[in-house]
Length: 496
Ligand SMILES: Cc1cc2nc3c(=O)[nH]c(=O)nc-3n(C[C@H](O)[C@H](O)[C@H](O)COP(=O)(O)OP(=O)(O)OC[C@H]3O[C@@H](n4cnc5c(N)ncnc54)[C@H](O)[C@@H]3O)c2cc1C
Image 1: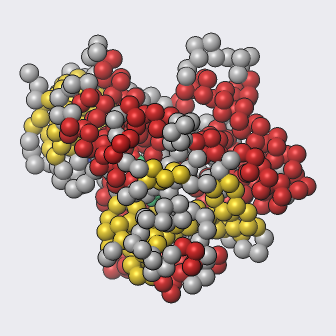
Image 2: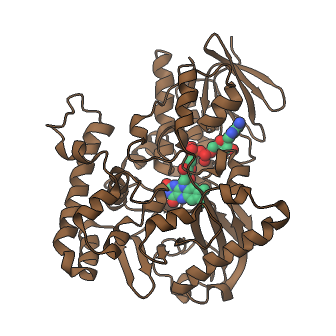
Image 3: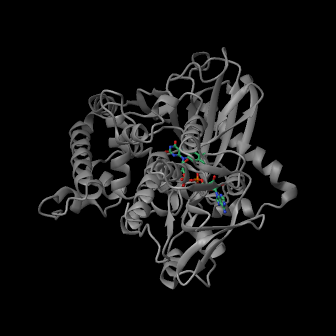
């Protein structure tokens, strides 16, 4: 008899929902996590009187109780809804290019259209046509990709088939003339890690649609509260967890999983292993190239590791309104050249796009009374940071943080005067805490013609499964969903 039915490696979103789904079906599940808390990216840390949200800016797919979205349904089925309180936001974002653009886009379709048409009256018709296309595309995407209509064809779903492989830039260019309007509509490109010229239109469309249809959300206590709730439910179902305990090897014999070896040398037998670690680490280090299927190793070589993030976490001694913060999310740009901004992610030069999130706008209890929490972020690849000598790291990090604060202050002047706590994370911080190559927060880059539409989520090694950003899409909703789907695949394989 193996020690466990399933060993789950990694307690990120995908690892937690897969572990809970399997334990809820009565399986004997062990969860191994190299860090000392659950969540992976979905976590928090404390400085002074602030508990800082590490990752989540806007949660997609929730919907309200009266019109639940897919994520609310999923969390209901996992039995964690009564453990976490969710907070709805009423705007997508404020898009600012100082002196040229300042538009706030509400999280409802008519309001978003009105805000854009008000600012760009000459392209009002194109705004309506674009939003119509986004909705039609997403409805057809749900039917084909989500609900897997077996009769799917170009004749049945012409909009989906026509636009699925186009880039966001192709579609924006076909609709609009004004680069500022394209910028205002494409701001969510940072949530996917690729500029519109490389980003699948599908991803931009789905982001706009899902955040409007089901609203952006956050949760009381931050994403750590959700990670804790998932872990609690897993333990209640009889699951077992070991923190500070990385898997060092996944044992494979005769193309079949045998179990794992921990970094302490413990050998744990299991017929199934679910990996929430990156697929690169899983094959190259845990399984080992000698046991990895050659085709899967070759496939890994075709992907490029996606961006990480540079984040300045600020605890401020004022309420949001005192600092002019009236929306939760603001994107501040230097110009409308998103390709240039993307290229800057591979340098240590000042970023072209900066996101500013204030959690207390939607949830006035997020921070202690009279204070608020603001996060200033730019995505970045790890490469430039890997070239910084250790002796220059702190200086380089704080210089880059100043670039971000300068940009935030262009729209919210005076932030610096109210800093009570400040912490800074670079791509190397994420690399260290997650163990992912490049500290990547969304897994591989997903170009229009190499998106997860084409990826295999299962392995040719029997008993090896994956959950998380590296085998699908990054982000909270997709990774939480991926764990449930991967658990289902194991249960199917077991004939349960
Ligand atoms: C700064 C930042 C901002 C973000 N903003 C948003 C946002 O606004 N909206 C959104 O939807 N998404 C956002 N994301 C992305 C989102 O958080 C991630 O894509 C998602 O949480 C990844 O989940 P995952 O299941 O892939 O696991 P991960 O979070 O990648 O966790 C993997 C886990 O595996 C563990 N692990 C790795 N190797 C081993 C091993 N050998 N043994 C044991 N354990 C191991 C790691 O320690 C980690 O806990 C953001 C991320 C960051 C960092």
